[in-house]
Structure formats: C-alpha cells, structure tokens
Image (tube, rainbow, N blue to C red; front, side, top):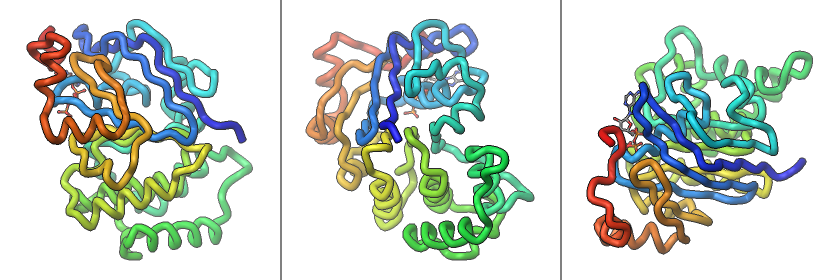
Length: 260
Ligand SMILES: Nc1ncnc2c1ncn2[C@@H]1O[C@H](COP(=O)(O)OP(=O)(O)OP(=O)(O)O)[C@@H](O)[C@H]1O
C-alpha cells in the first residue's frame, strides 16, 4: 500500500456566484494530522464540502489531486471509493436504515462487487469498534442518527471512520457539543486510525481537541484562504489570545468571506 497524498493547489470555490474559498493550497500526506482553525464564516466547512464534491460548491479555479488522480473529476461515490471520508458538522438522520445496514452498504460500495465483506467478519469488527468507542450494542440496530444526541452522532461518525478505514479523513467540528468523556472517546477513535497510511484534516474551533489528537500542523483560515501555518503551539496561542493578533499582523479587518 502506498501512503495517501491529498494536494490542494490554488483552490477557488464559489457558492451561488459568491467566492468563498480564495486561493487555498494545502497538502496532506499519510501519517499526518492537520488542524484547520479560524473564525466563524471563513470557509472551513465550504472547503470540506467542496473536497467531497457537494454539488452546490463550484470549483472555479485550482486543482485537487488525490494519490495523483484529479479528485475534482470524480463523482462523490468515486471519491469515497478512493478512500476519502467526511465527518460532517450536522450529520443527517436517515429513517428506515439501521446503522449496521448503512455501514455494511458503505463498506461494500467501497470494496466493490464480488469483494463484499463477510457478514460474520463485519459483525465481529463492528462489535470490536463499538466497544472501543464505549457504544451500547443497541446503536447498531437503531436507525441512522435518528433520535441520536449530538454526542452520539459524533461518536457514530467515528465508528464509521473506524469501520470504513479511509486513507484521508476530513473531520468537520467532530468536537462540537461533546462532553469531556465523549471528547476523549472521539479522540481515542481518531488516534486508533493513526498510521503512515492514514492522514486527516481536522476542522475545529478549540485547542482542547488538539490536546487529545496531537496535530502535526495547524493552519489558520481567514477570508477563504490559509493565512498562517505552524505547529501545535499556534493552536495554543489562538486559544489564549484569539485571532486579533493575526488580523493585525496581516492587516485584515473583516475575517469572513460571503460579503466580499
Ligand atoms: N449553501 C450556502 N449558500 C450560501 N452561502 C453559504 C452556503 N454555505 C456557506 N455559505 C457562506 O459561506 C461563508 C463560509 O461558510 P462556512 O460554513 O464555510 O464557514 P466556516 O468557516 O465553516 O464557519 P463556522 O466556523 O461558523 O462553521 C459564510 O459566509 C456562509 O454564509
């Protein structure tokens, strides 16, 4: 297996003719965890949605390659098959589909016809990963995200991550609304994935999560681009001082995009 490589070059993304991402470049390789932080409305979730191929997000310039292939040319399901995974800020509820069914379908879609996962093996793995995440057995038979609390939804997304074993994961605010114990469990799940054949982009507002998932690099996003990159110490400074010092350094008055 070769180490994954996601390369974003000079990316521009618009929503309904408003440019949200403006000239963003970022590279994630296997074994690396990158964190993206930034004030509200600066385009972090837009970046995640554009990478997954959400139809509302139009890439107007730039390129994204995944293991050397043009990601932007791929359909959403092809991106997943190639090994890209997105955990969303607001996972949707799906009535009538159990958690276990959803996961088995997703795994089989990724593996392809004729290479489906054996049922017993699937059940064993699911059981093992649910134990790791301290999840009650009943969750596998509940309808996907229906009636799940915010924290349960996040934990469930990490379960999907562990079961699908993607090459690159984009984790958008997986820490929002989590209590301290749940935060540690979610972090444990991500850390379980750490290996040279896995890379992640973690979007977060708080340094707290990064105490548990140590990032290799921290990037600050403002006005639709990465304006500063550093190590974990950058997240610590943001937690202590906020974003004003970066705005002053760069001469930025309004950090959001949309209205520009
Ligand atoms: N579907 C959409 N239609 C119109 N505008 C949108 C849409 N999605 C995002 N935007 C706008 O794009 C800008 C960036 O939004 P985005 O959600 O990417 O920011 P964010 O950095 O993730 O913010 P937060 O930290 O609050 O989650 C905002 O001004 C937002 O209103």
